[in-house]
Image 1 (cartoon, rainbow, N blue to C red):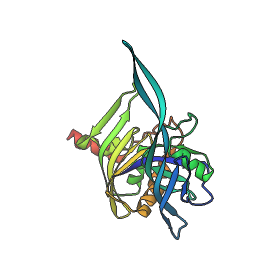
Image 2 (image 1 turned 120 degrees about the vertical axis):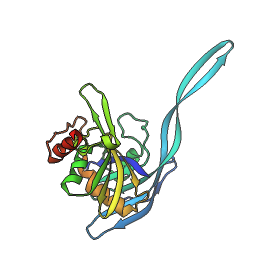
Image 3 (image 1 turned 90 degrees about the vertical axis):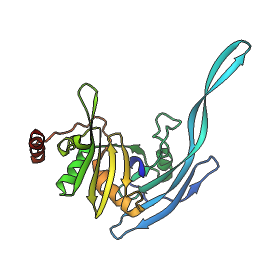
Image 4 (image 1 turned 180 degrees about the vertical axis):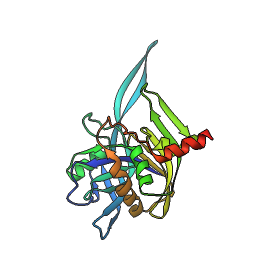
Length: 245
């Protein structure tokens, strides 16, 4: 499975990423850099760094028991795929809170330092992804559609209950399979910015990069309060008639 969270640079970097390491435990390893005729440069690799972690200690003082919480650091690593000097996006497999509240999550804060540009995680619009598949005339099926009601309650439709007419308005998350670029892509997308691809179980950096470039970046936003613009479609009418029958 391929999974991760997406972040966008404020401005594209001047150059692709390069290998880096220092004595503080931060390191960036570029495994592949692939440039294509349409000026798309997809890179992939591994990033390592130190992140804060709260640790609780139990102290015995005679007959008294006290607890002490302290912040320690631990070293972590994450795989990544990126196009930093084109559209300026990075998909990181793992993220962790940074030690500074104003900083973005690790490893995005390290990437920001490496390219000299501000970076921020984004939210995704699952309903727009669904509508893109429909409007492009692709073959697609829905497995899950999740909505948040006005009462801050979340409704999840699974299996046969996950209608296409519901998925086009899914504001929390959606799971589906779409036939994109001659490949069946089975995935889940959440508004929080999380993306997971189950099938193909492995995608080479070019294919994954193009999928993110064409299908994920266009539905990304920095806004926290994006509302779904509901629409009445012919598909809604057909599915309603099928359920009634």
